[in-house]
Image (cartoon, rainbow, N blue to C red; front, side):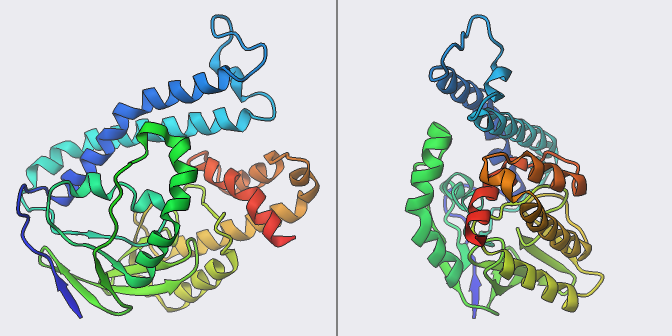
Length: 311
């Protein structure tokens, strides 16, 4: 089966410009987001005085993780804004219209902003049927959880994939042909690869590059099996374009597998600390493997649900 995109009916916007606009938008929300979260916490902390105390003190205490996550999220927004500025010059040089959108998996950071990316362009939003089904199944839950966290920054208008394909189908967009491969559960409840050619694949979050990972969906066993299978069959020259980090070789798969194994071993080694609500020993053990704080809050959010599922 082949799905061919239609020409945009209203305005033209090449993919790079669409991504750049999305990135630049984070510059507008980073400051208000940081202030709103900090003020909300300050209003509930006994003894905290906005006129005397630095906001970094909100990291102290049992709820300190909220302000830590606030720092990380705000930093990520500012970084995204900076990337958007850097892409602006190159994006403006491109003249091709937005041909469509490929969705690799059903996590909200990969679909919730589709309305903003597509705008008024009448282009296909393509996903496998299984990915689209999970998006629709879980969107109300994501809305109830992520919506209050993000406040006004959470898109109230969310659109879903409207061109659904099956495993092995091909999609033609902007003169390029992509083939979808369903991997099944892994980092999310349904991971897919989009192949441009035998050496180029858009891999979503099957692997991260130099950033901490999200495991709270509880599919770590499936994810490890998927990584092992991909390592065994992918060509050494393949380039994986991942959702978080820079493109890389299939060595990213082995790195991701070691990361997950290190995380699980840390949960075993520090089970008593986790049971007492102390995540730091687990975070420190994983940081020893990956000395970075990029997306560390995702790992922190994964500790309790993963440990609970393993007991």
